[in-house]
Structure formats: structure tokens, C-alpha cells
Length: 471
Image 1 (cartoon, rainbow, N blue to C red):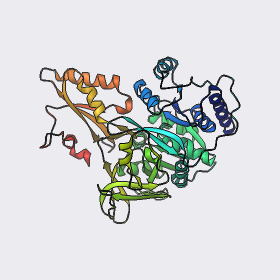
Image 2: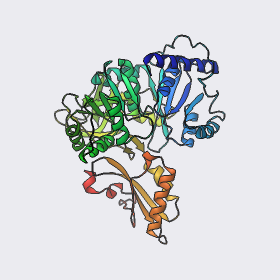
Image 3: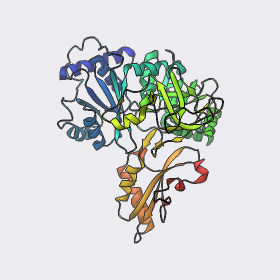
């Protein structure tokens, strides 16, 4: 799709919203995989003065229904297979969730007029993330915030019209939204959108076909690409001048292996949904393996103690970010908002160490959430599902490291006294496969006689992590 075609499609979408009577300033769901039409929908929403809420079709119907109600969406654009669209439409189109019929860009539409003008402080985008309880939180971004992201990490990328960007992260995530939409469109560059599951084969095929100059992915995608090369699988990535890794911690060894395998530098970045995109990044011309880098332009990063007081270089503590890219706040989560958006900035939930020379190093997440391939996964959700399975007396889901040093989820299951271990393992694997989306599935199930506890009787999750992988 050309820029002229994208503009025409966005205009038609805005006209459809006007025809449907959707009021300006309202929020609308776009449930879609990454496609040019989905991008046109986002632009069309902005044209009409609405707020897009881009969601992954991987989310289950109850989650989508919850989000529709939570953000008071006035309509939903469901770009999913026909059978699921009918089921999901029935689930969503129940008052008071939605006020309007779903837009149909195939029908005759009204003239949308000139694109809407947003105030800088106005909400222009909502993205959903999971809190510590697993409840999705709507993060409200402003126009000023989007412009700050462009001036921040956008200046690190320094895209031009000759660039082609390939992102494995989807539009429903801040990382992917910036990679595929904000940065390329602001520079007049090309954007390659991946539809369907992302794996080493699909990414390698896209690189071969589209010859991107900038590759943006989560670390485990780089691990799969590097592993293929190390097995002797030919892979030509000579078109890539720069690679970006974010969404989860990039181990030093994987960073080094990626550069050795492909020759391009890997920028390691750290961001959060509450900050929309990357706020700490290593230098493109001299990436330091294992480092989380320095603040991008327009960002002030400090290490704070539990009371919010800044700590000196050499200390370890909570990462605090002050920047115009910080979100406005959450939708109807005053307590969580007060904890996260505090002390003149944002606590993204990461524990970092700042070396004496000022370099930031990621230590871990500050809560119990698992960060799997850029997805935040709440262990409690998986544990509740497994505990409901017959033959399972107890369970715990913890983060561990695979052989490549990437974080993975492991389910430790305690069989009931009268249950056959093989049957318990099989039942656990079945429920994981059947009732959890791929990004929430534990990579393995381990049987254990009893879960370790602290002296106060609390679950000692740290004792379940294998020492050699916890490093």
C-alpha cells in the first residue's frame, strides 16, 4: 500500500465513522492482526477525532468484552475470521458496552472533512497492559506523549525515506505501535507488517522478501534466528543496518551472538506501556553487550529507593523515568495510578543497577509478573486455572531462564495423594494448551512433592528457580 492509498483508506474510514454517528473524542476498539487496513483504521480514527484502542486478536472473548466496557468503547472493528466475528460481535454488542454498529468501510460514507486537530494534552491513544492482579489496565497516551516518543527514541533510529522497518512486535503493543506506525510514517519510510504467528521462519522469510534496513524484535526472536544460523541454516540479513531488541531483557551473550551471526549492531532498549516506547537504549554505533544503555533524548532516568529518594551511581533500586512521553494515567485505576505515576514521573516496574560510570543494567522486574517475549504474564491467572484441574493439589508458576538466558514460565505442580503423576502432568499440559493463549503458556510442567515456603508460610518462589538459570 502506498502513502496515497493509505491516506485514501484512512479518509474512507473516518467517513464511515461519521456516517455511523460516532462522536468525536470517543474510544473505538480495533481488534486486528497487523495489516495495512488496521493501520488505516488507526489513522481514520485520528482523522475523525477519536481514540484508537488497538487490541490483539489473541485475546479471548471475555478479555475483549472486559476491555470494551472498561474503556467505554463506542464501537469495535473486529478484523477476525467470520465465525469468531459473529461470536465476538454478540459478546460485545450488548448495552452498555457499545453504542454504535460496527463500521463498514464497504458502504457509502460521508465526507469526513479535514482531519481533526487534537490539543497536545488530549488523549489520542489507549493501550492495555496487565497489572499485578492480571486485570488489564488502560493506559492513556496524549499527543504530546507521542511527539515526545518521536523526538526521543525516534531520533536514535534516525529513519529516512530510504528505510524499511520490519517489526515482530504487533501494533497492539507500544513497542510495535512505534516500530510499525509512528516512526516509519513520521519519516516517510516503509513499514513491513507481519500477519500471523511470528517465528524464525516467518521473520527470515520476511527479511529475504522485503529486505528491511531496520529490524525490531523481542530477544527470543533473535535467539531463534541465531540458533538457525548456528545450525547451518543460510540466512541473508545483509540489508539490515540496525537491529533493535526490547520487550524483555536482552542477555549479553545473545547480544554478542546476534552481532557475530549477522554483522549488524543490536540496540538494547527498555520501555513500558506507560511510556509507550523505549526510554533507555544502548548506542547504535557502539552497543555495549549486557547494558540497558542510557536515557534517550528528552528522558531523565534515576534509580530510587522504596521511599522514592534518588540513589547515587553504583546503587540498585527502582527505575524512575521523567519524560513528556509518560502517559496521562490509567483508566479508572486511581490506586495503581498513584503508585506508578509518582514523584514527577513513572515507575515502570523495573529494578536496575547503575554502574559508577552511569551505565544502566537491568536486574529484574519489581513485581511478580513474568515478562515472556514482551508479554506481561500474571502467574496467579495460570495457577488458578491449574488448581481447578482434578488431581492437582497445588501449583506455582515462576520465571526461569532457558539455555539462551531468556525468561520463560515454568509450572510446578503438586499432585494430589491419590493421583497418578503421569495423569497429572498430562492434564496440566492439556489445560495449558486448551485454555491459555500461546504467550501465557508455561514452557514446561514440573512435578514436585511440596511447594517451598518461607518461615511465615508464604510461597518461596525464588527457591523454585534453578540457580544456574537464575543468574
